[in-house]
Length: 226
Image 1 (tube, rainbow, N blue to C red):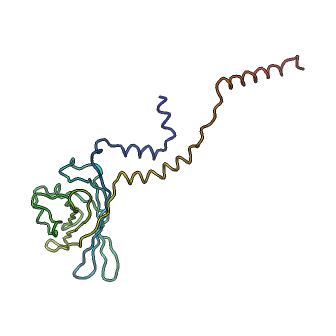
Image 2: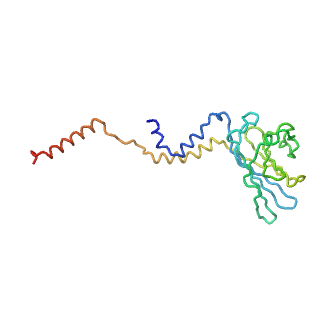
Image 3: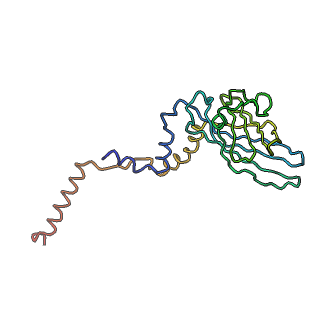
């Protein structure tokens, strides 16, 4: 039971942070926080903007367990008309691994350009969202390490699609970002905890003080004193 008392000074937020940052099962897998943006022009005027955000493993899917912890990406799509008015078509829609959605598909059939196109039997870092009516697909490249670029294929109708320009991505290690978030909390805790320890009197000295105090009360109440 005495060991549990050491947990009391810790704040709830720090305790949760310490628990969530120590996951032995994922210690060998590096995860990245990623944000990407790309645009596509429409023939009738206006444009579409695609914003990706989330986290994903550094390695390819074939090198890590299926559905690894920390893999979660969303896509937001906004339409800007000729007058500059903006309308959100999809807001934070979940992106899923296309190989899991369509394990028997020919991934090379998706009309991506160049290195963004998948291989017939290899859909590494190809993603799709089921929120799109006719189909919306995302390709991140390169297929290992930190993603640097993104391209989107968006079907507006069953036979009509737009292909975005090559968008850039920004990535960062999740561990470093967690440490960055914890720094202000650690600084605030240092301000709360006194820098110098409290000086406690030795037990023998404290015992002597109590003894003399008791004798003094006895003398003051004695009839000889009066």
